[in-house]
Length: 385
Image (tube, rainbow, N blue to C red):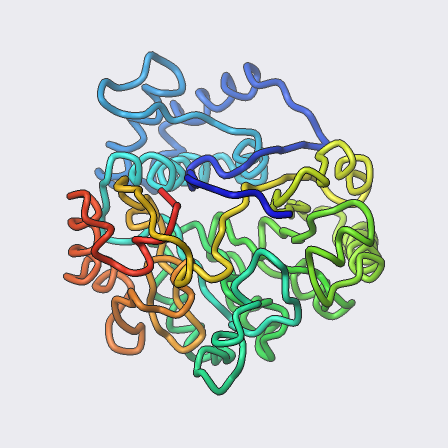
């Protein structure tokens, strides 16, 4: 039985998080301060970056800034920072601040803090909490299914490089299904501080494992919601836990033998749908296979277009946080709107920056900020803020 949800806070979607390797927070912050205060590490920052870094320093080392939420370093962020060189850390913190704080105070600049690129919209699973169960979406005849071409992917990456540091290669489908995915991974090498893949791991064979470990992927998230096969198969329909475990163990072994210096972070992350799921059970089952175990909050998006009307007036923070680019180049402000009713344009016609600052995006932000999200579908039925 899925839980009902009246409000979904995107900023704080983890409802459980466990690290295999512990760390001393005070020691980490002290070292971070030394890195930030070393002028040699600031050479790559422009004036705008330095202004943001100043807010970071006030929040981390002093009493913060009036009228702004306080920026904090969470455990998953600590682990990401630990994969970076010292001269990369200040720039990373600037982009992390833009991702976490700017959406809360409704600031946007030339580029989205986060970009999700969809290699494919096709999925081999039919998870009970996902819109892939919508038969007016998952069938090719409705026009939503397809794979991104390598040329389109390169066009997007070329525009993002040096401007956006947080990238996910995932959205509505299972990315490993994309025929050009290995070539896409190769093209991203050494281009982003934080490149992430979300996968159900069902197609994680030897070739794919090597491709991921050779690439610039920093965080590899295995989507799994249970610690026993029966519950897993009930939630992730078409999936078999035994196959996933075999693939993840094989990935770990390939990493150990062939890429001992790899800094890639592995995480099992599940959607917390019901009370049968238990973080302690997940930790006991998965901790030997991955670096992190997490639950994210359940977001009721299986078919938002048929959901009841929401009374929420709070603006959707994703309008200031991230951009989604679908397989066909269509640009969307969120993936709850999985049929692209709110599409702001196409990457084949305008570049990322122009789309992010476009009149379509501005109007959405203005209307949401004026308590008028009810004028837009599916915003009027969505619970994300």
